[in-house]
Length: 460
Image (cartoon, rainbow, N blue to C red; front, side, top):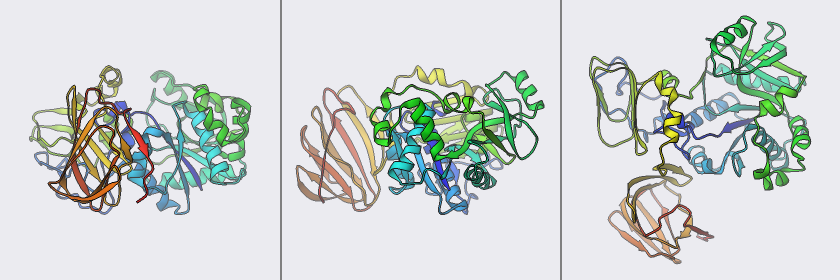
């Protein structure tokens, strides 16, 4: 089975744990299978404190959870992440270097992204044009039956049931967030009569009464179908051509560009568990524990969830239906229902990214002044930074824990806890982690910017 996972967006509705680099699918909040939750606070232990931290290896992200579930259902599945270049490092950090990634040079909505990923599968990975592909979001919260349904969807497309085969989610309430698929019959697999755009609640109820299903953005097709549509709509020739002029493509969704104009569509009903974890309200419904991080809830709290990445305690008393989220990006205290309206407020916040995962580890900004910045850097064992230099800033590294090696202007030396390394502007430098390595990086300069960086090849 070939699967394209759409991994885009900034996840601003889950601020402050998400940002332009760290989207919601990378936040580790789900307990891994076969781990002991007995020591963690939960609904039966509201006064519990200091649950496992976010970095705890017993937790996994939406991305890791969905990828694990796909591989458990079909170990031979070919999984490709369609994503922007800002997320590549985080994907490698969480899934390893071997996962397939179709990198979008810039954001151009779902049709260009899906066309590029499909061309990547055919032209780069060599998957035949007559093979089927399933496309789905990376961030649904689903049970194991969903992945069996994905395989059924793939088989329907492979058999040529229709040019497009959609998964219709059985609606649980008249939602205004989704478009609706109206099937011709009540069969498990049926031809599609029509699509309806996102309605108001009253109209949504009418669609449900007509047998309407939620359009959850899950569908399948043969590679040749989307490549032909790309040739027609994007003047596509091959992957390299599409990639090179990606920034010139019109922003348009797959629904508008393809689905609304395709007469040969079938839908397969899905009645299992499926949740779109796009807001704090829906996300906390899927959490197994009320507290993640250092927090205390007194006995009068009801339906309160706390997610705390800061190294300081949070105390909540007498609260009901509230989510509290704290990170180096900021602190959110919100009524759960009101939390779904967070985006315009977050859009108005102008702040640099304070936390990010990289392919080699992660960094967290501890302090930012006009002419200095202090960062905590964690490198995973066996990894290293790029060999690079800066024009406008000096850097000082203080090793906090672990062992490794630094290379400064070609000179290699071992480092351990307590060592201090100084790099003047213009010096080429990197650090290699022989064990897990933590260091404090102080940047000093009049113009500190993420754009002030030159990368070099390094032979080790």
